[in-house]
Image (tube, rainbow, N blue to C red; front, side, top):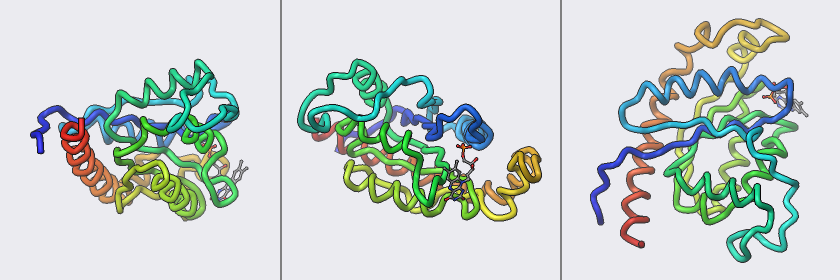
Length: 200
Ligand SMILES: Cc1cc2nc3c(=O)[nH]c(=O)nc-3n(C[C@H](O)[C@H](O)[C@H](O)COP(=O)(O)O)c2cc1C
């Protein structure tokens, strides 16, 4: 197995695109936590910066190259990364349509790479993140065991319509799961980077 010395390149993917989204608050906070680490390079990947159409290809790009230039740009962007942190909103107990569509718009570029997640909502988007993990299996991704869940009173403390407090008010409740999630992400990123290099 080749020894990998490069730091894993990690994309933090914002999964909500609506104009009034709350996602930026947890996303920016999580970006700061990831950037503070020495063992990864992290970049923000905002689905708003990709004008992805509703999936309308003849097949997944696992089988047929995509025709949409924006889908190809999305795939080329994903290919640069070794792992992902998804920022997950929960819509009707699942992930957003925008994130599902973005997941469907690539295949090879997700595969054999790990992901973790930070979710927010009444139950910390636990149901949405579980669904994301099922999708990840089909995309040949590996999920961390841990994730960061901003739920219950923590969520309502920071949610604008209720408490509207800054993330720092609740961060002591989140930092242990941030550390575990990112530790696991780096472990899997290094393992899969080495395995991909060997396969290549
Ligand atoms: C269509 C829709 C469905 C929602 N369903 C849920 C839900 O199932 N569970 C939950 O905890 N919050 C739910 N919410 C509330 C969201 O947690 C809250 O609106 C959050 O701000 C959404 O993330 P965003 O603002 O980044 O898009 C829902 C919101 C919308 C707009």
